[in-house]
Structure formats: C-alpha cells, structure tokens
Length: 89
Image 1: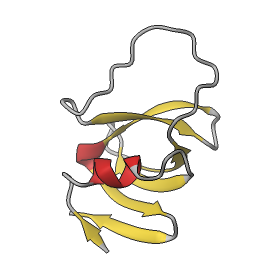
Image 2 (image 1 turned 90 degrees about the horizontal axis):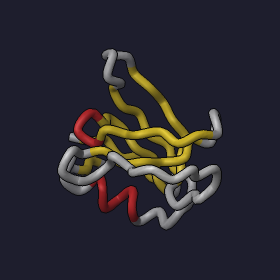
Image 3 (image 1 turned 180 degrees about the horizontal axis):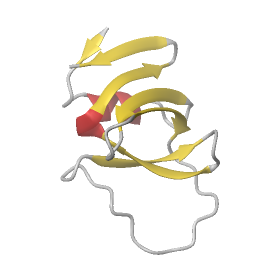
C-alpha cells in the first residue's frame, strides 16, 4: 500500500503506542531499519524535544537499542504498522 509523505505522520500517530517498523535514510546517507514505538516515558531526563512537524522529525523509542531516536519523515521510505506494509511516496 502506498502512502504520501504528508499522511505518514497520521499513520504513525494512529499506532497509539503500539510497535511499528520503518526504514529511512539517515543523515549520512545510509539506510536504517528500526523497530520503534511512540509514547514511551521511560528514562526521561528533562530538556527540550527538538522534534516538530515543522522540521519533519518525530521522536520514537527504539526497541532494539533501548533509547530515544529521531525519525526524519521526509526521508522515510517504508513503514509497517499493524501488519500492513506502506511504501512512502
């Protein structure tokens, strides 16, 4: 199933904290595959979150490394939510 870059944020937000997987291009140009979820309030130390829709970043909890990561929605290539594979166009 294809989804536009503008709707990707809605698809990820609809997970309501459930686990999803994604593929995106990192800042250095390499491809990254990540299993992540939203809504984790563990290991917070205060400070500000630099993610916003304006800069197309979203903060997620990486299930493999056990830490917070940022996903750039403008470089997202694939997404799997609730067993449905999405190709980002």
